[in-house]
Image (cartoon, rainbow, N blue to C red):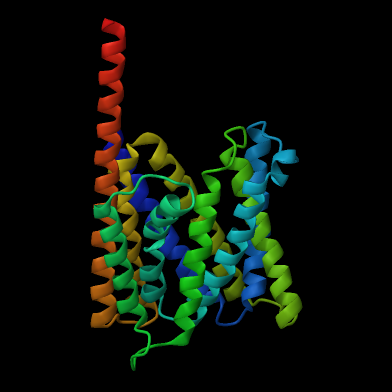
Length: 302
């Protein structure tokens, strides 16, 4: 029952993120990217600050200056700027498809940087998954769009953010990280506005889009957090890929964007390799748990 609830919440969260991307893309038709990031970042930080206050969590903590937290916030800024820029320039389904490669990049980074054990099967899955990304990007071919590199840079930023999160001390709560992360995105919005020009007065429609992005974004974040707490990670995580399905539907219905064969093929490869990587990780953890129980049993007997 807990796993089923976790799956439903995960799917709800992915639907929310797809809707958030839709509202951001709609708002970007009249608002500069920097202004969108400023509003989403600072209002999101305010919302999580309120949650933290009710939870008794202190945001004015020296943990903010921990190297892993600083790296996480910096790469949150890079990932946010690049991915939101990608949403304004390329089809929604294309941006979301490339985003699905983030877990593969995190697994590769965990092996190369953090020294985690990754067997040849998962390395093969990672390489095949990156081939799927190349199918979507199509470098050197007629269908190549340079703007798609914004999405690639966004994925790189978000992957480093996730790797940095693994080194954040346990004493720093998720609410603190969320509030600091959103605040960093707001700061990046100010920097972009300083470079590209000032903000503009949003229309009622654009304000509605921003409010919609904030509302569904916070709901999606809550659903994602609850899903990972209620259900087994290895069970609920594969349903993250439902975001791609929702994004394709939104792209077709709202923006009239129909993914081509290369994008569909690349998406299938990325999802398949991502699911395989999750399954291998689940099996590895079960084997480690079994070995630990066996060792404990022997020690007890002795």
